[in-house]
Structures are given as structure tokens and as C-alpha cells.
Image (cartoon, rainbow over all chains, first blue to last red; front, side, top):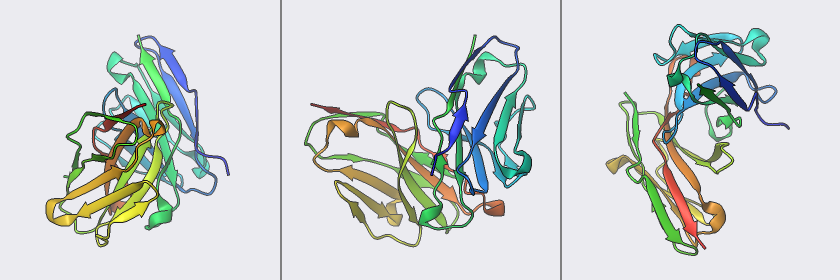
Length: 116
Length: 117
């Protein structure tokens, strides 16, 4: 069973450019989460998918951010017109549906974005 | 609104000492879940434990133990006989039973633990 994978692992971009990250969850996990982690802070929730439906977005997710999960499998997170404040680690997590100890979120290795 | 506070920013102990990481949480829900995650230097968050709000029993897993006290809204984590491999940032997190089953996690700011050989 492979874990959650994210691509790329590192991205350096210039301010104003668009970037797109990909997350492949654990197969058969129908819940997928995106979080953002800045230096010295804990991860902050960005958005959540159940299958292909995006059911919640944080107020942290400005209009420049968009996420998709076509066909309920992998997900992409796009940032348009990047700003230096977008520099962070972007984490993806997946879980099965339901409550209980076996439904914890499994995290990927993250994509570290640096905006210059 | 839910909130998690980890007042200890950094802790250093000598190998084999015991160490306790503190976590205090705030929530208005009666049903919630508490977690601890470990983030080693490699960066990937590793799940350690999940407790629900109705189960206040302390738990022990090898050298790790957790003390959940609803009266003080605390969920503390103790490592006994610490080892160098325990060096990492540890996060406490809270999840409420949200809409559509969204178990989004609210994390604390983390405690960086350094074990000195």
C-alpha cells in the first residue's frame, strides 16, 4: 500500500507566476485535504474533498487559489499570480470515510513553494 | 471556534530522560477528537494517536503515553527514556465532527523536541 504522494516536492517560482501542485491520495481513500504550513507554525486547513466534491474551503483560500479533484482520485491545487506570502509547505492528506481510530488522516511529504 | 495551544516552543533533554509535551485545547463541541502527530526533519507528518472526547482513559504505547483530562482541557504526551530518534517537532491537533463529515484538523504551533546524546 503506497502512501500519499505529492508532486513536485519543491517549487521555486517568481512572483506573479502560476503554479500547480498534485496530490495522489491512498487508493480507496475518498476524503482528501489540503493544508498549508509556514515556518514555525502548525499546518492550517485549506480545503476538503469528499470524492470529487469540494465541500469546504477555508477563508485562508483566496480567489487566487483553486483546487480540483476530478473523478475523485488525484487532486490539484493551483495558485495564480503568486505572492511572496504564498511561500509555504503545502500538505495533502487523505482518509477513509467515517469516524474511528482507523480513519486518521495520512499525510504526504508536502510541496515546498518558494516565491522569489 | 476551536483552538490548540502548545505553550512549549522548544524542549531539550538529555537522552534517557523523560519528557512531557503539553497540549491545551478549546472547543464548544461535546464530540471531538484529539491527535498527536510527529514531524521529523524529513518533514512528513506521522500519526501517533487519536482519542475521542468520550474516552478519558490514559493510553500507553511502548515508551509513549498520553494523559487526557477533560476537566483541564489538556491532552499531554510523555516520552519515557527518550532516544535521539525522538528528536522532531510534535503537533497536537483537534478535530470536531464538522459538516459533511469533514474532520479537518486544527493544529497547535508545535513543540520542537531535541534529544541530546
